[in-house]
Image 1 (cartoon, rainbow, N blue to C red):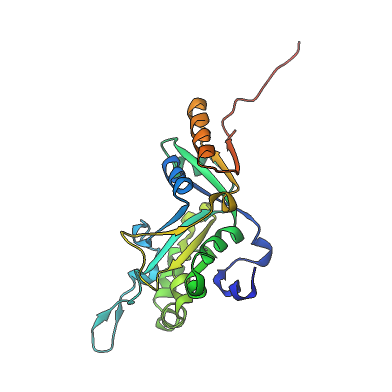
Image 2: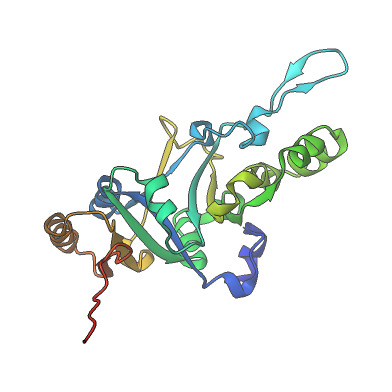
Length: 249
């Protein structure tokens, strides 16, 4: 990791930069990523948890009674990954229809894919950070402190905008989440989506298909990925594979 990048990595130690991280998504989305050579981040406005995306939800009441919001609150995009390799819950929660895939990369590879796509603007726009889980009471207490709100979220520039996206309630700790974050300072996103160029085989090291998927369908999708010149590992999760059991009598 270049020294200039260190402050763009939040809550992640140097030792964790080569740690594997995973993303569970649908077959349709990974086929589009591989075919188009583009990764897609979404606006946090699409997130359902009302305690997330703090800066966008925060209203500031000025001394004259006027209410304002952060002017750049919606100029941000993110993508959620996890340090958890695989559980029954990850498949069923993220891809309930058994049409999923799990992507594998590392913290460093993912961040660099975004950073290197932005040229001179990367330093002020490309971040990756580990989610900080807090109780609902802890979050409410922080947001009730004007000094903390202004020093950590509003007056700290780009870093404050990023860190406002890295809080989540402890009820979601099982997600073990890490987030790729892009600050859209030049207003290039559209329809709550931001796409950037990515070389799939250089970033995504493994693609693992849903353990509930039919084998014939898995083989078909695998063949399609190879036709799109994806050269990384392809497999199917063995989570539900029936073990061989034999007893001699």
